[in-house]
Picture (cartoon, rainbow, N blue to C red):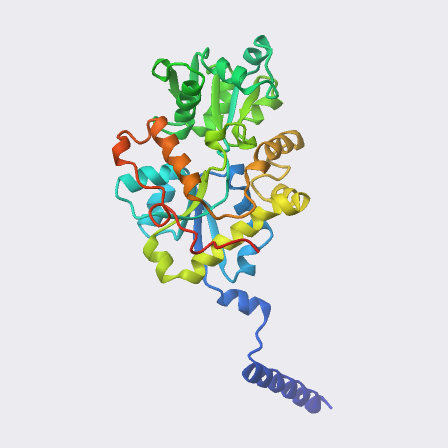
Length: 354
């Protein structure tokens, strides 16, 4: 009896092997293991990259046939350097940073956009907003005027978008950007500096400045992600960058990554509750890291900035170039690159939405 039992198990194993050899059947685990792996870095872990976090949470990369190893680079520069130096396949970072990198000769191209508005939240000390009797629902012109009265402004580093956005907005309000005083404190220190009254204002993407509201000391006065400033709306802010030669040699991988992120981003329009739940479940925004109050506020500030698909336009890139010139990122306007497709960006891989 025991001998017959062993024989039956052997027969079953043999049949299974025959099925695999004839029909090409593989287990899901084996299929996943054989999927190619790509490395993706984001500049920082904030909500500007919400579409990437949702794609990761809902396993959209795997559905496109790739395994994505996602890390945080700790800044736009190391993110881009990783792609240029080939230690990373993709970098998700800001479009004006891509322009600066290209001016310095870095071989980079954007193949997907996961924001259609600039997502920075401009926060001020709450007492300043209250003294001026302003809320984020007040007329934009009045809120911009308050920026011209600020004392020390916090920024991550000299020349960073957290500095340049104030120069741009204050110029829009008729103020003189040359008179601004900045304290360069790094991204992690800005919320605390605002809460403690060291600075009057700062701008970062959610949830950084939204956390200051929970303390009762800060207030997000101008949430740019809501699309109130025309020059910074319909604007590819955070984009997926790649070396053009890598994309040309690996078109299926480039397409898979670009479309996985775009599919996740589309949920913010077609099924926002699913997108919100997936974002809430991600390790960067789960309840252990963010309270419900801060999460809900941050989500509200960024949800309208996620495009219905990740393709880009020449008009949008011209806005990026205009901002880069107006904010002083591009020092010599005559050296600004063209906004035409094929120079800084391409829709070749992301295509159109379903």
